[in-house]
Length: 391
Ligand SMILES: Nc1ncnc2c1ncn2[C@@H]1O[C@H](COP(=O)(O)OP(=O)(O)OP(=O)(O)O)[C@@H](O)[C@H]1O
Ligand SMILES: [Mg+2]
Image (cartoon, rainbow, N blue to C red; front, top):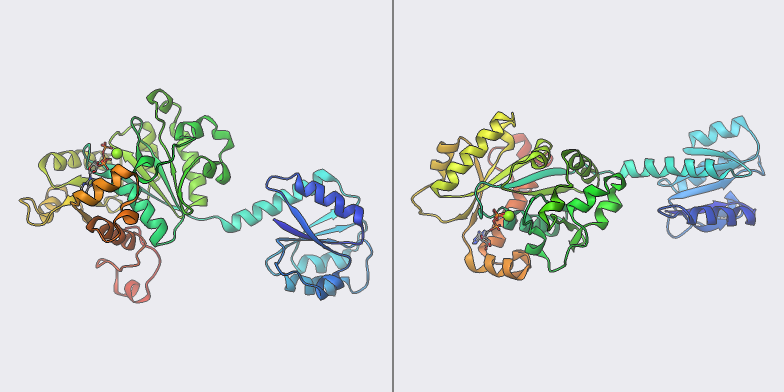
């Protein structure tokens, strides 16, 4: 955060600059003005995040000047530094939006506590309310990893969302390899082992960054390490992730264990992935029975049929009848484009943008972000394009 200091006291400037530089993240006291009048006359090109006003001198028009300054930098937080109590001035300062008043000479602890309050207020204002979407394979090889990773990439690039994919495979997690050639430096189990450090920047530092808006938290590559993950860790990671990402995509794999269950408990929408074949349908029914017994509402479960080919013996209405659950999307069988993408570790949207698989993923992005109005939405919602639906 950049700060502007208004003070005649060069020693105070040096003191605040060094205290600010020592903070994590640093407070950069980048500019100074000797008086509020000078600050008004010489506004900064880039508005500061924080304005520190030394009001020790106490001129009669201070309150007016402060009000004008607050209007000049409406987004900035204001901190007042003063060695005397001037109740009337303080009341007007508070009305002008001053959040913190500190005594001079500066008590460093009080300064850092005030900065913590300002930083957390600024952080709260920027918090996101991310949605958790889980992709779960009804049968081994259904395509859950291909779809979840490539969908995450498509969501970040086409809809410009901030997306985190978490690979929850307890064994043989390979999600990062589907979209990147980078070797993960950190994995889910490393994050769990250091769970006390969890916050937005720490989580971000553990990701394989596929693009600026899309990161993957890889699964442990050693099954013995995977044991480090406990259900309560997943709660903490998802809580932080929701605050820092628009969408959290989970590649759940096939296993239902304590960790994946806890993740599914706080999932907004579950997408079981299956192919149109009897063994897949049998396994899908078992999975849906488990979800029902866990009390997951049916409307949060949306089937995706992968490798779909029109004209097959089994049709989508048969599937609906057999499972009692809606198929929201189909991904076509696109052997060449998908195999090339998976083998090269490059998202299909980047490698073969015009392919049927890439177009289908773009459609899924539209559906999830409700940029395409699905038939089931009410007329008013469609007319006014209300909100983002959980499709
Ligand atoms: N739409 C598609 N068209 C053609 N091939 C596909 C398609 N989707 C997936 N595949 C192929 O199927 C293989 C298995 O896909 P994927 O690894 O995503 O399945 P999975 O459900 O994650 O399996 P696992 O149970 O191993 O986790 C991939 O190697 C990919 O080449
Ligand atoms: Mg998989």
